[in-house]
Each structure stands twice: as structure tokens, then as C-alpha cells.
Amino acid sequence: MTGETKVLNWYLSRAMKHLFITLIFLFAFSFASASSIALVQYNADIHFSDYEYNMTELTRYAEQAVANGAKIIVFPEGSIYGYGSPTSFWCRPGATDAKCKDVTTAAETIPSGKTSDYWQEFAQRHQVYVLFNIPEAASGEFFNTTAVIGPAGFVTKYRKRNLYITDTYYASPGDLGPITFKTPHGEFGLLICLDANYAHSFLEYKKMGIEQVIVPMNWDQDPNGGGNSRPARIYFQKMAQKVQLDIFVSDVSPWDGTGAYYPDREVRERNGLSDIAIGIDGVSYHELK
Image 1: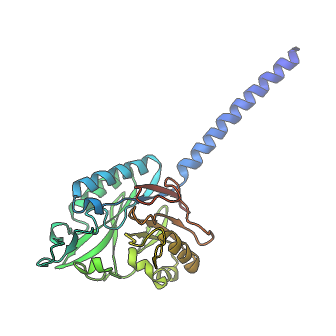
Image 2: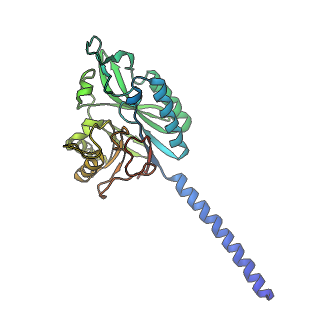
Image 3: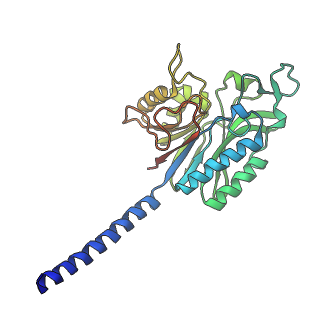
């Protein structure tokens, strides 16, 4: 090997090393700077009214989401206390049905209740947004409510307006109307489960200039499409195309509706959950605009 060849090889080696370091830096920067939403799929109904167990599991998924860089974490409808089971559901005080559980044992005020306090501390510590759903107590009434907590504390809350039969045993229809919230990672509208049964619920937000809607839910439709059921993965993909909005769904695992639904795609997007994950708890991650 000549002296000139040795010098050339040395320069090439140095150049490749610097290129490699630059590429690693650019990859790390792009990953760190991307904002993502974590959609938790979790079944609290099999642990109905077991607050401590459900909070422990949801905290585990939230910490996993933080470790994976998520900036917004969404829990399904009823995932703190349970929504309903074959043997139990929430009812107003005084109900005589043997399956009724007094909702006053679960309902909390928002944002001053213990669950709000817990997720406020978590959101502040990790600089994230957390969306959770609980029975809310307010002025002698009860609501099916999703709260939004951010790094600076309570942001807003949305009360379910279209009640499923399970809700009617304890809840009043939501009286706050459509609710939006703005973050450094985007602006979003909120719906809860049956609200999403109607295109006009989405179009309300579209008229407000909102392009992304978050839906915590407990869909209660056969994910395999048996009978006249409407599997969430099919229904929400069609809805996203119909209303031309991005829809982010956090569902209970037996119904397997969790994922991102975009109007320009034919199937939902999932990252972290397999395409079909019926009965499987986990988290699906999606980059935000």
C-alpha cells in the first residue's frame, strides 16, 4: 500500500465515522422531537369496582407510554372503576336491582377528586397529558366524564351526551356540549363511546376547525362481526373517511377498537398492538401532526 493510499483510506475512515455519528444524531433528534399519543387498551370490567388494581395497571401502562416518548396518554371509558359487567353496573342511590352498585361509592368530583389528584401529579412529573374516565358527581347529579390533565394541572372535562343503557342507571346526559383542548402537540375534540355513533358529533368539531377527535370507549360490539354487530375497527375507519377527520380510539380489550383511524387510509393504524388483539391489553402509539 502506497503512502497516498494510506492517507486516502485515513480520510475516508474519518469521513465515514463523522457521517455515522451525524446520522445517529439526526435519528435521535427526529425521534425525540416527534410527538406521539398513546392509546391504552384495557379491560377494567373484569375487575369491576377494584380501584386499586385498575389504577396500578393503568399506571404501569402510563409509565410504559412515557418511556416510549408519548406526550398524550388516553385510557378507555370506565377503566378506573369499571364500566359494567355481567354481574354489576353502577346505579343511582336507592336502586333495588341485585346487580346495582351504588355509584356514590365511585363517583368523584372533577378536578378535586383523588383520581384527578393522582394523574395531576403524574402529568406534572412526566410533562404529559392524561385522559381518564370516571363517574363524576356534580351538584347532586352524576355524569360519565372524561377529564383531561396536563403538565400544569387540570385542563378540561367532557361529559358523555348520548347515554348507553348502562349509563342511564346512574348518569344524566352531558350538559357541557362539545369540548376541545389545545396542547403543544395539537388541538383535539372529545367524544365518549356512543357519542361517536353519530356523524354530526364529529361534524360539530369539524365546523370548529378541529381535525383530530379522541374517543375513549367501551364499544360493546362483537369484534368478529357476528350477527348485526358493527366491529369498531370497521365502523371507525368508515366514519373517519365519512367525516374526514383523524379519530384516535382507546377501547376495552374485548371489543378491540383501539387505534388511529385516518380518512386517507383503508384500515386502522396500530403500533404496539397486533392488527387483531381481541381480549389483549396493551398500548398503541401514533405520531401526531
